[in-house]
Length: 403
Image 1: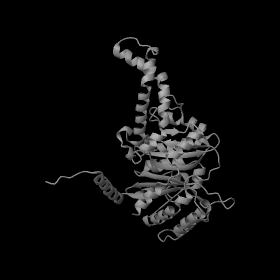
Image 2: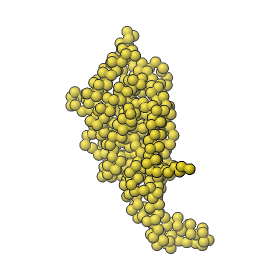
Image 3: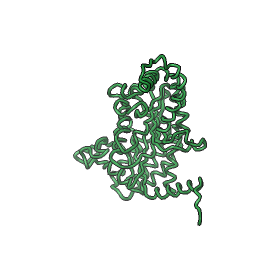
Image 4: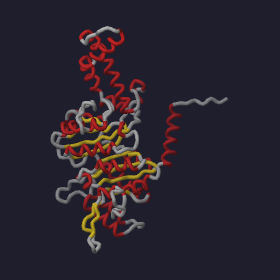
């Protein structure tokens, strides 16, 4: 009787074959959020529409500052279509050259956001959620009905045109555009159009991505009240190694604070167990002794929540690759960016956060509190380095799509 031996190689081979099978069942689709839409702080609302009105998964998000070559290449793809209305294609291609190419005055790029979605029949679903550039459906049914404009005179002359987003109407158009994007990703994307001001990191936590919902977009929408500029975005899964480095300061902080906030909890627990009155002073020494153990356990809980894996259960060599929970990182820039964002997020404990703050509205407890924000400019730079905010994880997905 033959005995099957399940090895590491077998597991990797099986997972690779399974990923190939799934890739044939799934389809990619993109949404390019226009510079005007970002300038008008409509980014969150647009993202919320796509996440809630389709059952597609957001697999990549990256800020672009298109070069003239990228803008001209995209406009050319639009003009060369043979399966559409020529007048509309001319309108869109002219719009791309005007709004996407760098300004002629100083050569600075415009910010646009590239979102990549995955799921069954993704191109059609994105197209239907987006709507026609002529706003033919009306009543706010589509993204363009709500955020776009198409104004004509009685003689049929278009006097104002803003399509809000650009998407692919067909698979062939999608493939051509995706190849162009892949060609320019290294040079035209990452940290875009910065002005040398203070930067801070915001990270939307995994509880926002457990199911398709408005939450991620709504949080970004609230953050838009900051008046700060979004200069980078990255959709990613935090690895165990990244989480351990990212949250390493938590261990010392909790070890130091536990004797202060833990004394009452320990005293109450002992009193209940033994049926006697125990004061906080009498358990102070115990708290100081168990503080490192408490901090380490809390640290393990945080890493597991962020990554899906408990670090003590993962082999050291596997920690850089163990990641299963989704996060979305955003970099905001402007005067006093750190303090402004932290005020909008609210207190770490949602129960203590002020009404209207993000954590009060979307948080559950101290750990599952919707979002993380850097507590200092220095920590912001450290945290951006840990998650490698500029790393391109989108091109890998695109290359896999093309085989």
